[in-house]
Amino acid sequence: MLTGKIRNQVDQVWEMFWTGGVANPISVIEQISYLLFIRRLDELQRTAERRSQATGLPVNNPTFAADEQTLRWNNFKDKDPDIMMDIVQNQVFPKIKALQNEGSFAEHMKDAIFMIPSAKLLDQVVQLLSAINMDDKDTKGDLYEYLLSKLQQSGVNGQFRTPRNIIEMMVELMQPKVGDTICDPSSGTCGFLMAAVEYVEEHHSKDINKPDNRKHFNNDMFTGFDFDKHMLRIGAMNMLLHGIENPSVHYRDSLQDQGDANISEAYSLILANPPFKGAVDFDIVAPDLLRALGKNPIVKKTAPKYKTEIDEDGVEIQVEVKTKGPTEKSELLFLALILRMLKVGGRAAVIVPDGVLFGSTKAHKSIREKIINEQKLEAVISLPSGVFKPYAGVSTAILIFTKTNSGGTDNVWFYDMKADGLSLDDKRTQLFKEGATPTHEQSNIADIISRFKTLTNLDNTPNTDSPEYIRKKSEQSFMVSLADLKADEVWEKLVDLRTKDEQAAKEAAAKAVKADKKPKEYKETNYSTSVGDDGEEYVLTQESAYDLSISRYKKVMYDEVHYDAPKEILKRIKTLQTKMAKGVVELEKLL
Image 1 (cartoon, rainbow, N blue to C red):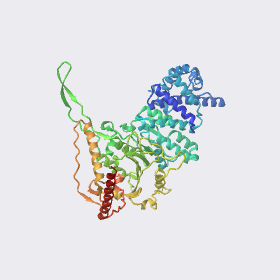
Image 2: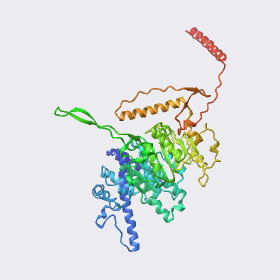
Image 3: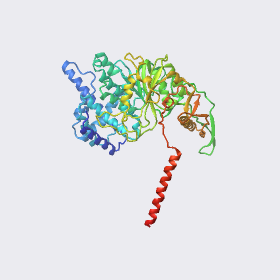
């Protein structure tokens, strides 16, 4: 449990970093992580030394040699701040950068930079960390979680963190087990992996303490990949402080073609919120991922184009015009990657932007068709658009599916989530008191978990007796049959269709600008419409197969409004006019 005193000390340290010129919150967390690692190395060696005294055997490969004892945490932590600064900056830090055999965190230390600006600040951070009992996994884990919460409060870098409540909900829905191998291919701070660690420890505490299971738990059960070295260091330290002795957090550009080293059918559970702002060049992407999106990975080579320019000497020269090659959206590539990385029978819960659900490009349709027809799509949970504020207001959804390679999609569960327990504005403040149970209006999370769990029996077979099967499509959750998902003629609201057209036009314009072409001007399509019973205009669309947007299936119910007869309304208006005329006469008399 993190006390208010420790929180206040962390806040003071944070402010001192900021006033000392270290304003990037990721850099602050990194610097504190380095010191935590230095302390951990000393504690590991002390444990080894106690074991050596008890057994009479020498310490094998000690981190600190006999002439390096001044570099150990317990030997420098109480020294004068200036002396401590010299030891840490010029001796300890270069040493830990050179370590290669001390686990995942040391693996990412090669290009680390010591940025603590003053001896006073170093001393304050060291005293803060020394006061924390590192034998208490909950306390040190809470300390790091509190540090990571600063990322969410920061401006630019907050996008690295998926909201904690959404992570925990996804883990609760997937219910990881002791035998699982769990991966996040875009791990960031390892939030999903940490939530999975906590779930397994809470729900399988007896099984996890069996020797073989504990070995699996500490070494192979949780794997994270990222290509940002800063996030790798933070993620690895997060795992260490939550009790994973040898965290498997590695540098890897997950979408890049690694040849024979491409990961295939390796994990039984994948939890992820892949980056969904950007496009990746065809020439670095693994070919099988492009094929999964219905794309040809072989790019046709065109003859180079040249333009005439004048060089410094005034001479005309021919300069090759560089043209941008084809690209593909990262969120679609990650879905194809996740399908490849999962074992047959493996499950995934993945956050995707809404565009993935209804996008009309060949790649969008191909990946949806692959998940629905070739795998088993189980659920689509539409998240409120404010979940990622203040950094992005984009609408997102959670896809839950199982890799079968033989189909299996039957009925898909849709849930229209309206509240997550926090305000959906830029402040994202908690809507209920600490320790209190939120109402359904404040948070739908408990309802989502309880309803989802009714969909399967204990042996993971579909529970067709679940009350979800008889819920109407006008309710917050409902089932959609495979036949409805594959239907290619659907009545869609004109308003919704216009929104999709505008989104597609924006994407096309962005692609044109990237390719140095002039974007086409958006013009509304003339649709043949019919008026529904609700008074809205509808269009019979021909290309709606495999659309996963909840708006396509959800029925909106309108309350019938009764109006008085026109004669009755006119009568009331005349009465009001008479009163007003009398009032004017009385005012004139007063003048």
